[in-house]
Amino acid sequence: MRLLSGEKNLKNIAPEEVVCFSTVRNEALRIQSFLNHHRSIGIDRFIIVNNASDDETADILSAQSDVSLFFTDEEFSKGEYGLNWLHPLLDKYRHDSWALTLDADELFVYPHYERSNIGKLCHYLSAKNCAAMLTIMLDMYSNKPIKNTVHHPSTSLIDTCPYLDAGPYEIQRHTDVFPFIEFKGGARRRYFWTPNTDVFPPCITKVPLVKWGSCCRYWKNHYMHPSPGDLSGIPGAVLHFKYLDDFHAKAIIESIREQHFANAKEYKQYKKMMDQDPEASLYYHKSIRFESSRTLLDHNIIKSELDWDQLCGTSSRFAQVSRNALCPCGSGKRYKHCHGVMF
Image (tube, rainbow, N blue to C red; front, side):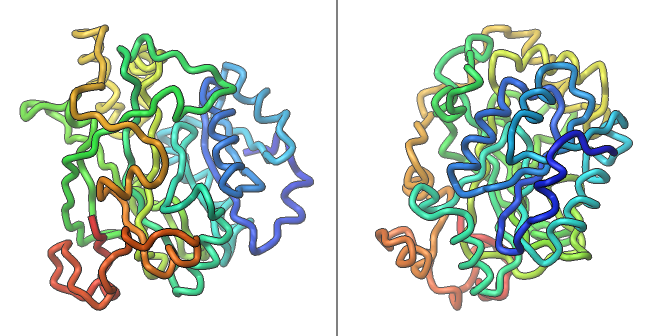
């Protein structure tokens, strides 16, 4: 793996910085919105691995002064879906420091992110002796057919796809790997999966924000093994922007490449459904519009804590119950001793 740009940026990273890491391939349509959103919440530096893009992705990223860009042409599946490229970079540049790891079609949000930047959040988590934040991944979509959901690279992905499902979201205990809990549901499961589908619906659990240590490792992108430490009492969300007008074409390409998990069975399911219904739209009568983090708080999709609310100078009516209360995840443990979450 070789460095394409941004070597100077890698020599003066302060421990208190929160650095964003990502692996990308052909994300010219989304990457500027990705950068703009995370800059707006306080990310000052990005370390990105470009996996043989043949669109304008590398050119866009090389022109950014806050991006250090690496390149690999190794097959995505042989690189353990990008983890074999990211782990050495996380080890080298973020030891005992906070890192945010995301895909280019994802935007990280948390309670009151509009008024309190990510550095403040990480300082709060460190003071609470927490080492990671759990998130639920929320599929975002427009009120148009997917094929007509046109995104302009300079605009906000949230403006293009402002809708999501309020639920239902299924919570299952997962005893083998951190965060010991798994979320299922949302628009993808509702539209693309049926009881007869021969592939499991996608996991929508992620742990993107971690105080990285030498033993930290992501596993299958959605989990970690071993555990990095205690989980934050504040669950956040990753807004997921897969359903733009390039979706059907991407599903066809990835079905042929077979570089994603299980020979791209998930993409083959997308292709099958889109072939059957090219006019597919995820919007329906129960869709809700995302306005701010308060939208997710109002619908009980994420939660806050009284201390965080007060630090942000906002209402505490969304605060979780005491961490001494029993966690409702089904473990029977006190919340402060459990890796379950309050959904």
